[in-house]
Amino acid sequence: MTSDLASQVKDVATVDREEFQTRVEEDVEVIKRELEDGTFDNPQSIVGFEYEFYAVDAETKALSRVPRRLLSLIGFEKELGLHNAEMSTSPQPLNEHGLAAQEAEVKARLSAAEARTGAEGMRLVSDGLWTIPPTGETATRYLTDGVDDDGVQIASNMSNSVRYHAMANTEEAVGMELDAPHVSLSAKTVMPESLITSIQPHYQVPHARDLPTYFQYAVRIAAPLLALGVNSPFFPPDLYDDVPPEEIVDEAWMENRIHVFESVLNAFDPGKVRFPEDIDSAADAIDNIAADRTIVPMPVSRSNRFDDEFAHFRLKHGTYWRWVRPVFGGSTRADANARIEFRPIAAQPTVRDSIAFQAAFAGLLESTFRREHPVHHLDWVVARDNFYAAMRDGLDADLYWITNDGKETTETDDLFADLFAHAKDGLQARGLSDEQAAKYLYPLRQRARHGVTPAGWKKREVRERLDDGETLADAITGMQRAYIDQQKETLLDGSFTNWD
Image 1: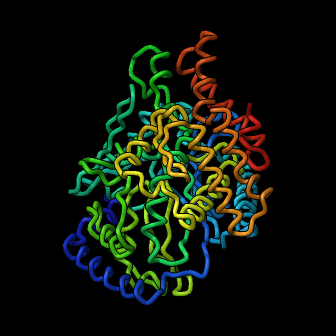
Image 2 (image 1 turned 180 degrees about the horizontal axis):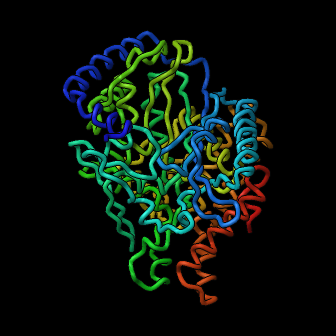
Image 3 (image 1 turned 45 degrees about the vertical axis):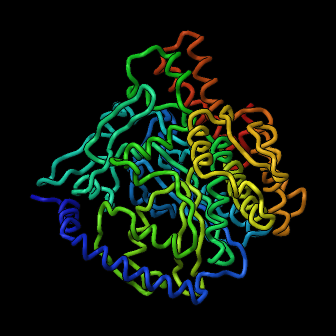
């Protein structure tokens, strides 16, 4: 007998692809009319935040499945894996009170969630990539376990979101592979993507017509912010090939999360997940989304939301996977906005570190746009190469930059001095005092000043354990438990700077 989930996946397969695309293109005309009418304009810059976690057993630190009833009780949303949980903040004006409200909301909701999950013997972990599978299971089995339900491939440890399961049962090719240094894994679903978690700052631009310029700056600051935020050098030990442990550590990329997302979901070049191209106009951004390859054309339901007036386009945008992407939406006409969603940063060791990235991203967009920073002219190919260099090497990457005085440089000190000066300037332009702006940026300044990132911390921990004679599996597991223990003491009220 076919399960309800498999039946729903089969129903999705009956959606006519050409008809779906026709509806998307009709929606494009709706959005463009609203764009011309100024519907997506705002009186000020507004910020928002998405924050992903994974759950572990409080005692063993092994990955733990979160009961669906528990997710609803703590006010979190389901993500791809049964171990995932996600929160989204309420959008706030970019000013001292708005940023404080963002941090307070994250802490309030996370604190309440930790109390509830703690009673269930679990902890929520803020991290880029989990490494300890559930007790008694291997990561390989957890990520690939599934059933054939009347011809429908169902992943056993994936949430019951029809879209996720439909990706494995579509005529459109999806990668479903892990491909990183000394790691390779083939799956029948996109479940390996559930290895990774992220934070995603959002920035609503005041005037939608200016979106392309803001976007161009966002694309160019992506690499240095990624370099500061790297936090996923290691995979679960059973995923590694049989090579010397020291070689695995030395050659590990600092942000494997980037390539996990790309290799699991990309089957062609250019892939669905990739570094974004520049855009010439807000209308150009809309056209790019509409023209993107559709993996799963889903059935569309409508409600009284404003953005349900372009519901097919909105649904398609959900699989418009770029590391920086434009968004057009809003539940009401009054809330309608054009915003930039910044997706390269892994979940961070503490809330303060996470909010530091939100503040830095918003402050940089404010200042670089207002001051017409010359990094706007950095060639797109160089910006893209910077991004993947930062993925591989973090703060050790040679990143090309143009400073405010027009100087081209690969000097890390010059780059970050310029970057933080403009991040601070942008925050002060939105009413923050010198002290307030400095406080938000301090955790990231310290990383740049001392050359220490969460990924670097993890590599050091694993190397020290290997030097003490531990196996690679024990070294990675020991590092991960130390990370979770450190986070337990600092998640809400400390920062990564306290760890050293």
